[in-house]
Image 1 (tube, rainbow, N blue to C red):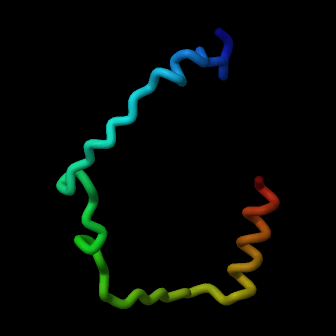
Image 2: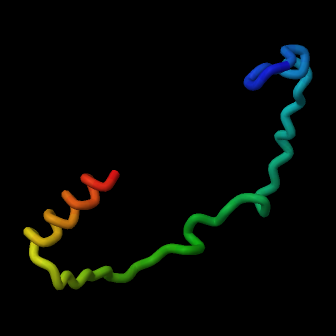
Length: 59
């Protein structure tokens, strides 16, 4: 078999393990964040745009 090939018989014989337990999941409320985020920029908009152009030119 080459790269990307598969045996179709293997696809037909797959079993799905649907025995999911509640404790196996992720509690999404466990890591909530009720804070503030602030940013301090020392550069002007023109300086930031110039830097962005430099980055684009190097790629």
